[in-house]
Length: 210
Image (tube, rainbow, N blue to C red; front, side, top):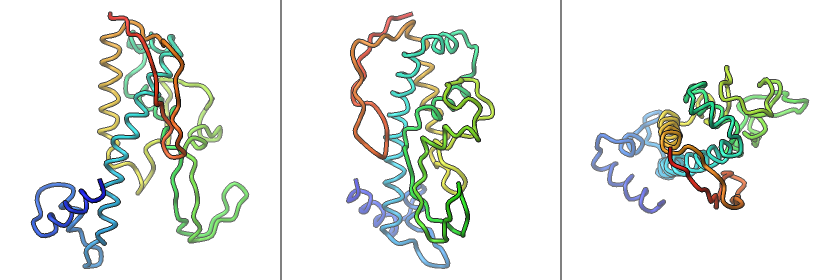
């Protein structure tokens, strides 16, 4: 993927088009083009985020609903909106486990002194279960409101593909609810081995049509 993106970035710098690669390849900060490696790695991050995160959230969300038939029935009966359900499944699964950030100023956080320039690992799974931020964080509430989860980032780091990710997840869950009366596990799940994206490598099920 990296060599492919590098090739595309160099092509777009000499022949820009109406696309994201061209925009990033020709973007200037202080009159200077962004370094090629920054453009390539940001594009790679967009591709990986769009593929890995949605895929893992889709599977982990369905796994959650399979384990909780009561939630499945609530969605089928339309008792909760798909939008709020998707947000809660994003919070609950938190498949993007952590991110690395650089402190922009000195601050005390949780009794710890953080200095400007320090690298800080932000554990999204933990933040999305913070009792100071969420009521009953260890419960999955498909109608949770407000739901200020960090599964898609925050501020300047909010996921560029968030609207697409939510649309994809909504479409997948809606299709599953429309086509399947019941989804039953037929064997044990196997979780992946990653400290970056938490997900499933194996999730055997049987779908009973409606």
